[in-house]
Image (cartoon, rainbow, N blue to C red):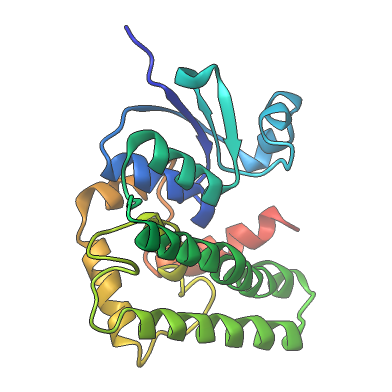
Length: 233
């Protein structure tokens, strides 16, 4: 039996979901290799050879002499070019798409990630830093307001169809609960959430490598928060 070109090493995190969303929505066959943080598999020598930063996700393209790609934004860009999906050929639209992709990579991801860290890991483990929490929650809210403004009168961040900018931004922005960032008063952002929430293949991707409903404020969030904090204790 022919093996799929793409091997995806990932976990159920906001960055880890990005290539899963792409591959499922594009209906591309791939091989999934879950990475267990508890066993520090992302730091194993064989994995470090693929991703020197020791993070997830990473892909290996068997169809291109086992070429490895790390960093979630770079992976989306690579997949978009390989499969000619979710990235316009029109020069200006393509540039806009990459601008909003970088907006997520340089802004929403880092800011919301720090908001999550200081509230979900540092604080419950006895290292509460109110200034840092306020700083990152406030900045995360500002960035979501930027998204809301951008989405006024449009269905997608760029152009008239979903792009890798939407794919990159959705799992982070949609995890506003886990970062304890309010989305009150952001109707265009909420409508964008609703559009993507209603896409079954994307919701299927979010169940992999295993479900994590707490990120979206669902299920037993208190238990999930305690378990998450304990992993870093």
